[in-house]
Length: 157
Image (tube, rainbow, N blue to C red; front, side, top):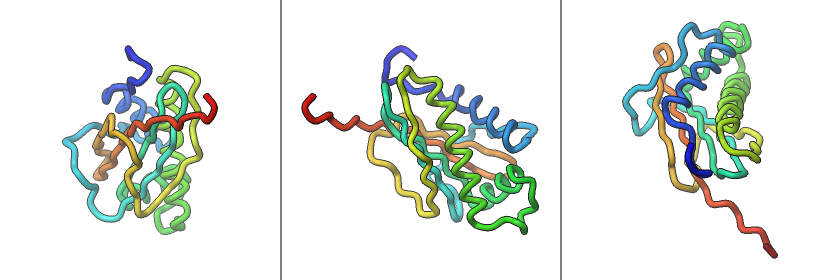
């Protein structure tokens, strides 16, 4: 990264996601990049995590409901029928938080993360999209977006 506003490259993010999926979901091979789609099919669960510091923006991780179900089952060691809707939200929130933490570690310090916010009706964050990836994992699609925002001005600065 050559400037403070640079974000990790798509290949670096794919590698981070692969490591997260193999470590936390036991996936033998992690998600791989595919052609972008404008919208994931069917119901979607999204996690948004704010990143603030030398780079300001939001990571959005979105999975199809079926992908969230499979991820939650793998994460919690349960069969899908044993999962409550809140388990899917917890899994998507945790995956989003872990991916955001890995991205934060690639950014110049200081940087901080917000708490993850999970939604079944995701709204895109305000700002300029800097990176948009569509990945495939098993038979599921997921999307990762990094949206850059302008930091709030400090009063009296």
